[in-house]
Length: 169
Image (tube, rainbow, N blue to C red; front, side, top):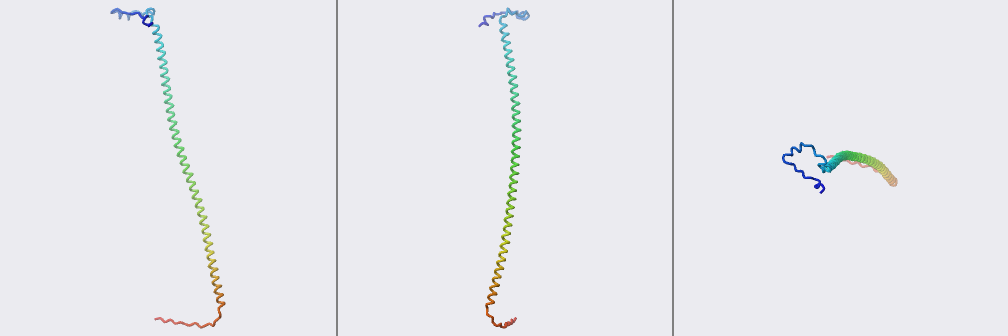
């Protein structure tokens, strides 16, 4: 409302438009509203500069965030590669350890089998020797028994043996 009371209607006569533009610039006393407009223009320029600074700051922050994101992606790739590598190494180590344990178990089992086979051989040889001894005892007992029976038999005269003739046809 104050603005409208300070403004004086300016009506230019016809054909004087060209003359007014060539004439000397109006003096501040002729234009009382110029000062507030200049102040507003300065405020707008300051606001525009602040907006520009905010825009540049936002762009800078955006660039920093993009760089951080790229770095995070690179870090993620490095960590994923490292994790895969460690998993493969662990798997290989586990396989090797398992294979060594299997070989040790096979070796132990083979040694135990050899011990059992050796014990079986000893038992077989012992059994064979005992069987041979039993046969000798049996033979000796038979001979003793036969000898005793021959000694107890009465002595009869010896008869001459008859000769048998076999005729061949």
